[in-house]
Length: 269
Image (cartoon, rainbow, N blue to C red; front, side, top):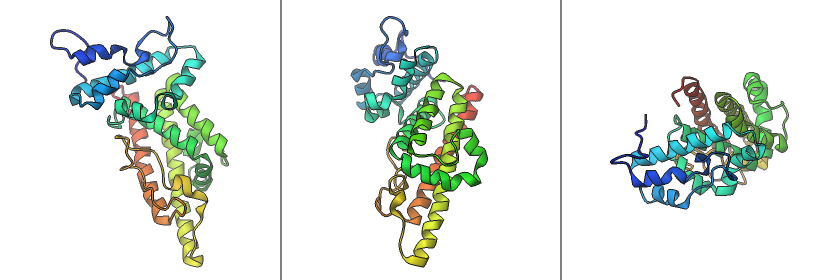
């Protein structure tokens, strides 16, 4: 449980000022336009090295405010703008608020949901290849994720939006389970494709470059770097080893989403 620094004797001045840092703190009435417009002063407080407990409070309070306000609106435009938060505010800005939070926290898992959406939309064509490879061995996960057995890039992009918007408009745990299911199927596909590349290399000495984009990029870890993600080497010529490494990293993300879903259902996220 986080200490309430929002006011009272001994409260942090920066926290008291942070109440307006996230536009989602305000009621939707009265000219609410951009959910999650970040106050530069708030971001600067974090960047300048706020006490870790205070920074944790800011991260959690902004995440809670965003989720709560958007879940109580009937305005589809508000939901759409919230889903596009990273595009409108910039990944670095949002990262300074949430990316240092652990995966078993609300801000930490929201950050991962946003990064998953970004990754899916940037690599739709490649991810559809992995999906088709992994789906036959993951029918249950495929059903949970809600994608057909042969998606194209547009299907991947629309699923990315659906998962994230569902976190704000539906059951948050279900959205996390869909995210986990998607990652699980892609992870299986990566491993299957890695074996195919290995076999092909052994027989012909060549590899397939069709999976280059997502083969060397995946969901970033909690601090916004790629130390828990994947290698950026061999972008144009992915190897079986790179795919296997990336699949291992993606399995961690899968577990993060699954764990967070369980915590949400237990009111412990």
